Image 1: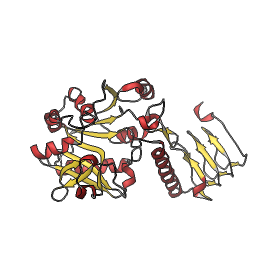
Image 2 (image 1 turned 45 degrees about the vertical axis):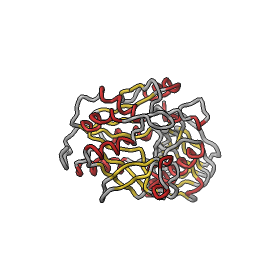
Image 3 (image 1 turned 90 degrees about the vertical axis):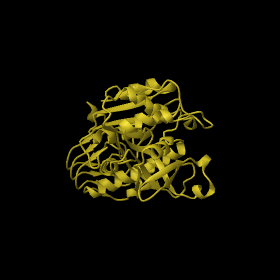
Image 4 (image 1 turned 135 degrees about the vertical axis):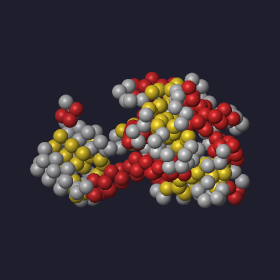
Length: 330
């Protein structure tokens, strides 16, 4: 591990083998939608933005076929976790998939849609500039209940991640938490990941335990704390899915406003993730733009209009109360 080395190959693994019992659904958790796209779409998009050597997706359980179908046209390698033995076991399976031991591995949960390309790139830069064996993405959250707490050493260094059930009262008061997003140097990770033990109520191998192992064995374990704590939010329940949807919609609206679109009432529109809107477009209240809708420059979309996969030519005026077309997919 050389400080500042940016020449190493990068691999990415997206963890998508969770059971998701609290969703109470016949569909995989990572296929539930945010802004019109499955949760898994977003970490996959972040992974691609880093131009890695290879992207792995770990799947398992009763939803494997559903996830395979979603990924059939994606440039990924699927790794199967036959038994649900935890995130540590999932990552350990990559030891036989990555021959290049002088490389980095970016680990990202499949149910974390709010992480941005920018943060992922900055995290990678921090990790490599520090010459770290492991870097954990962290944030301070208003309510840390349920999260693993970050116990720091000196400066940006981490001693350990303490899970809620194991935390002492003073540790529970810590608001800086683990996001479940990591960068590892592969040679160190696969050398020591065998030391993980399933010493917990679930009998699983937790990837968080590798932090203490690496700190004890090597050191050079760092935290990279971001200000926008919403980026680390994951989805385990329908309530959390709704919260993430609201945050994603606000982001989309903010971005299109910055790109020269006028919205009469920004809180009364619904715009999905792959919609494209030109400059000097005006959107009236209760507009819903779905799928891969494209709105040309200088167009006006009137109140209550619903467009799905539509292509609206520049300088158009659309005031039909409900307008539907699938022209964009033909």
